Image (cartoon, rainbow, N blue to C red; front, side, top):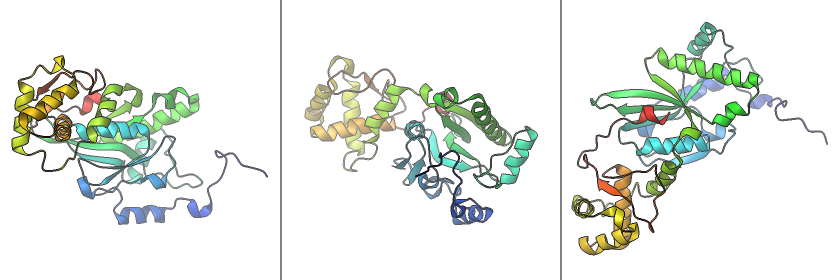
Length: 299
């Protein structure tokens, strides 16, 4: 039996992209909407990613996020936990094809086309982020997420092609006065990601726990403790006895308050462990979360 290398195999005609298929996607709402109503242009079943794709139920926005690699999943988690971010739109389309073609032409770059066709690709940005700046104004930021090894393991022609496509994307957003940055997964803080994996499981807890009364009691308790001198589990057990909430309830509420920023700790220095002390403090803006924008610093 003879096999054809994947790189040389021609897509079946029924699987080739056509302008009619693109138009149908647009008509169906792909790439439109905000927050819960947003529909990503690319969904996990539309494309083969070099990494592992993820369908991630949102905790900030009650919809499923389509993330095409582990790098996108990790960066999305950082964005979700940032209280200044009020919308995350992944796989955001750079409409129209004619505009990105014009940008490519101005840069003397060949515009990408769908395999086996001459149909120009609907280019996308991995994340279009809406955030509230320190002045209280809504702003946009665009981010592309890649692995450094994508560049390091590619030959010179592949490297140049990656850079060319990023240049089209960067100019598209520059023309709209939207900050665009390339985020390398290897530059993301590993300890913070590991901690957010833990805390995210407590992002949504039973509504009987995060009441104003329970939150105030736990915050008052933490404010009066030297938290870095006692193992975290012992601290939470003591809190349980003092504020009259069962241990598991205190544990859930404590981690939830860390996720939403009512409690703070250094998430980048080490991974949170119940067996070790954790220096934690009550956020100065605990009653109204107005944390500074972190978006530009993740790149």
